[in-house]
Image 1: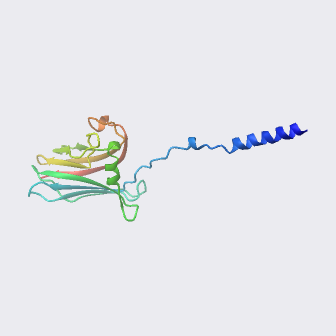
Image 2: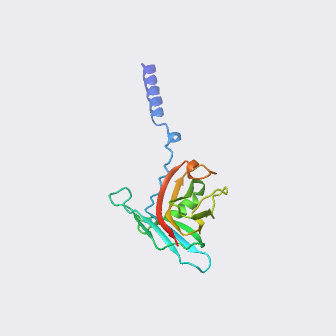
Image 3: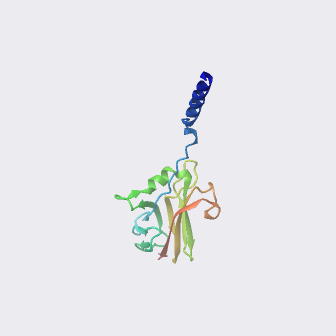
Length: 186
């Protein structure tokens, strides 16, 4: 009888010990949530004295909601002028608005902007900021306006693109935001 009580107590102790074991080594990997980008602001500042600052803005405050995004272009480019460009990304669902540009630049190895021309627009774009490995980032760039023309310029931000790459076609990754602007060069 004593042996049965001892074995029963031992069995209960073993089962209790196993039930309380720690599963800390199987915790889920934290999820790095995708940035919410409601607004893309592009500022084009002419080098030298010719021309005025031009701003381009795409704003989509309801994301995938029923309202279409709004696009604003403050003026026309001047042929032969080189513009220093910068891109600002905001999350305006926060108050005050959250500057997502800082996060993109801090995670530069995982992001890249691409510039795509369509419709005969005579522009040349050049990256002027880079990630930690010297690959293109693109939140800063130069834009050289060529001959009088019109068309569109699309800014595409890719998350986790293959780097280095030859452009959007072989970059892979996922699109975080895309903004297409109709432009004129006078």
